[in-house]
Length: 383
Image 1 (tube, rainbow, N blue to C red):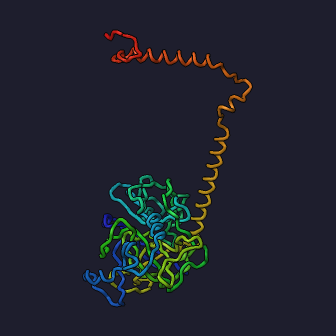
Image 2 (cartoon, one colour):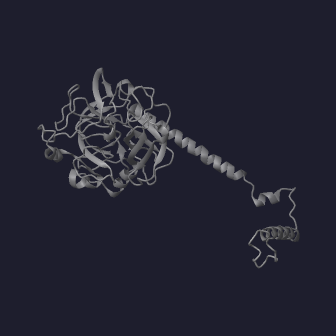
Image 3 (tube, one colour):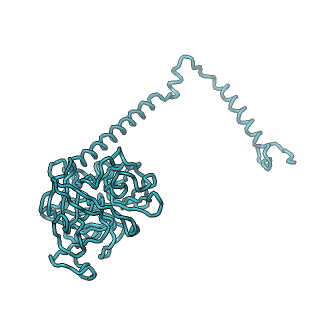
């Protein structure tokens, strides 16, 4: 995903394979507003495009999209969705991407093409990358790429994802759950995308809260080479949407939650079809289609996240055990008194030693220039 600041940067075409079908798709770098009336809209007709732009702020989801978001759900989205900022290796530009927290408040998932080339080489300085959520936008948290996740070229199949480990946990973030069922989404399911700010949004949008858009799953594809499932949908997207979270809606239009009453991440925004054009209705075709593309959080994607979760929990448990062991080995005053070679000195001997030490310190202080006026100092002539 490249923002407007990278207009001169080459955009790499990504090719995904579904059951021996080669789908050419491109990274999101333009504005894609789907026509909701099945009529073609002139891309230059801004007024008509604005009527069809389905992207709004989180606080506007009820009035604009008819989706009721509870106070707890809004707090979870504000704390667990945010933006990654990086600097390119030549320090010539910045790159941005949406990332969401899953399972633990120190695990993020996002798209891989934002930071790595199609051959798996970093295109940004990962040491200088930071993440911030909407709840604490001024708190920049560094992260590391957990394990070697760049062996598989994402432009050959649907492995365009990466899991990150934050060096500091997100405060007040009840990380999103994941669905372990075989099928995450089905044709006809309505979903809500939650992303950071995107370029070309025609509605009045605030940068202080996430951007949401409503869409429908049009087609489902089983992932190739053991990868995750992928979906074609009509969710409005543009630069900034890559890495955004996809959440399922129930028949009443409310967000679905898991058994623990927290939101469940179903998929992630990654790309748009090569033939996608602004102002056209959805059209699911391989070469000349007009659709946005999602990647499902299942199969190998889910296995990677679960593996990182388990390893981090084991590491934290070892740290806790080590801390307890260190605390037990520290000697206390009572333990020292129990040692047979320890002899408690009489009180008057210890008091005499303290008095001598204090007297010597006072004399040293009094020898310092401009301190002889203290009441407890003898009169000293300062030369």
